[in-house]
Length: 441
Ligand SMILES: Nc1ncnc2c1ncn2[C@@H]1O[C@H](COP(=O)(O)OP(=O)(O)O)[C@@H](O)[C@H]1O
Ligand SMILES: [Mg+2]
Image (cartoon, rainbow, N blue to C red; front, top):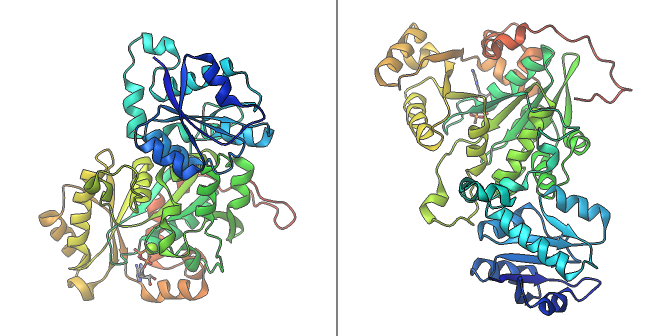
């Protein structure tokens, strides 16, 4: 059977005529004039593969994901070495613009077979049906840059702990916990990265007093999409924030809520895997909503605003669910934990009640909350109660600093430090030389 392919662009040789002369393995069913036409043709189910020649710069992770989800594999032809490396990092098969027709047909067949999970053939012979299913569940699975594969030589195995800080709507204190927890880890000598993945109200930059408009996380995702996120690029894009003599790395969030499409789940996943390979602890401040919009529409191409949060929660080693300790916040947290159990069944959240105060729940607030939780909450222990401390919280916000610096003796700071757990007992690293030396992970 001949493989139907789409083409886009021209190469140094007329590869379409070359393929047609073979009268065999590959049939060009449409020569597309532009990328939009190629994507539309792919979605209509016309072809099994696409050859993109010459002008490949628009071929990024997003385009590849769309083609793969339409079950169309990609071969790119380029004579530019840098471009070839970029494309290969995205998992795309490449050839020279002068590739012989037979070799091109073989590349197309390999790429199509790989997308179907039947490549290499030995695997197919063993009857492996799994990869095809896996590919459909995560069409971007093949997009991860090779650098991010812990099995690749030259890349340390991912080992850092990914701590997600999440919670329902209503400002229960997710960012307060995430920022201060990250500061505690960093001060204890852990190589720490703080990531703002909130697609509804990114605020880590404001908490840290950064006049940052760069949306570093979106930048990192863009590079991951293009297959250009290696260790050096990652270090360049992270901001460095001084915390009590050491530094905390930060990937700031999107500066406008309408930029949420820039945090595509697969790209964010790549960024977080790489982050984990380079840091001891990665603390992620998450958005609150978990609704699967795409499940409602059954449109696998629809962008997913909550996809970023879901991907973080799926990848997290540890998940802190922060709720406000009052009669509005508690029921919200209970509902959110219920949603969480459906959305990410594999995860187990640690419940953190924040802004604990007698004025909201009565005398002996901790006992009151425990009792209410036992009656109405899910069967899950309360991991921590953080006191309401408006003076300390406001002073930190005003100064753009962390509690460790602006209110080191406050009960709130100590309670958040307690959440860092055993990692804080790790010996503190020797102070690094600052200023002249670029601090590396
Ligand atoms: N324990 C606390 N005591 C007093 N104020 C707090 C406490 N935790 C958070 N806040 C304040 O509540 C507001 C919302 O916190 P924030 O961390 O931005 O919430 P979220 O990230 O969940 O939207 C901020 O003004 C913050 O300073
Ligand atoms: Mg927040």
